[in-house]
Image (cartoon, rainbow over all chains, first blue to last red; front, side, top):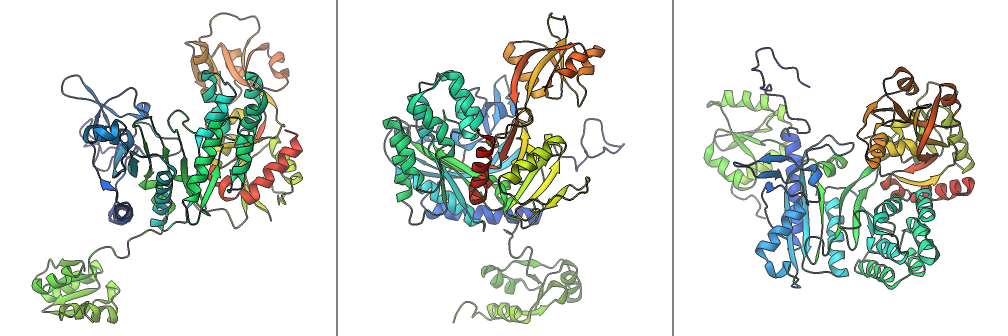
Length: 410
Length: 208
């Protein structure tokens, strides 16, 4: 905590005091975030995803999936509002209002993308942030293996977009759900058993199977499914273990998704995935990268949960960038300091960042360029190198050529 | 987050008695580990793994953040930590119970429970519908009962000898515990070529 200066008014934080779990992004960090956001936006746009925006203020909803995390406020009057804690429910409402046909079950591919801030009132385990940036896509109105594969492919490419090597863990919780049904697990015991399966806790799974008196083929499959992770080879075993048609269909769907990939070597299968079993109805996935112990993004199919047919994923920009410290913009700040406005226009039109000198004389401008480490100084149509700014003669000539009007032409 | 070294695995192990048994199990499973004789060393680089030695309550944090790929820790600590780590092997040793303990002869309403496991204690009381408050302590919780700070404690019980000599009785078993192999979620998938054989070997050894 920052100690409050004695002169500060009581109740007022000093200027540097931030609420717990929030942070500044100085230019280096903000530029890195911007570069990552642009790359992700370009990726999703190039696949035909349309931008949408949803309000940061929502009505507080006790049935919201992240209700416990809600930052609450009171509206004028007595309505309780909440800061947006997740994009997916807000997007589902947007679809309901703007595409009522799709919300009613019309089969039509609706591709949406978003990026923005979300707020969580409590710190998640092991993380210090309460305000972060969520970026993601939703593919609404369709449900088949081709749609599942498209989402997984874009999740994989999102990781690559920031220069990381992706590995995507893919499962289908419909498999575990089918096993629990086949074994007649009482509804109130499903969450505990699904949780033990998801944690691959063999001892807990065994104890619960014993306590619930589960027997037969379904019980065998329940005990075995946490270890059903690896490559395509495990699909046959999963099918052999399947006690009912629903379990076989879950395996078939996963196989159908794999067949959509030219190269599925970056996908790691796991039929023991049983996270949020009541929400995710179909294929789910998480992205990892090497030497980073936490998932970079997660998503899946949630048909029937918020919309009849929908799948998507969201990533936390802060998490993604903390795994990719190398994803920095190449040059930060202006390349040229100018006293020549018409010439500067030519450079700016070519995409070069040019700052206007604060000083009005060449000597003052040169001192300014040195102090600010700007590599080139533009005076009377001529570029001069500034050693302190890391100038190179080759680059100077390139920029000078732009001023001569033949830049970019061969 | 810089990894410890180029060893294929980083393991988080708790100091104390469990360390010896954990090392023995991991070695029997075929891992070549180097442990220096210096008791104060916290990090030991071996041919097959780097071993980090820490307080047992810290093991889940190291594994969850992926600083260690895997670790050994009691189920009691996992329950208190509330983590969703993979726990694929029950190693069997360090067996104990997490129990509700009261002074002998007392049976009225419990008003205050002291524990090194405040989360487990609160969850247990909530399940019972008890309004008792929970006080978090960091050691010698029996003293809380004997001094009147609390009228019950939630703590680990191994043989029960300490309880008996202090006039305390184990009233209810909340959870059974033993040492578990815990594995980071990303590591199990990305390093399955090393971790999967280790898991199989440890399961064979513990017969579970």
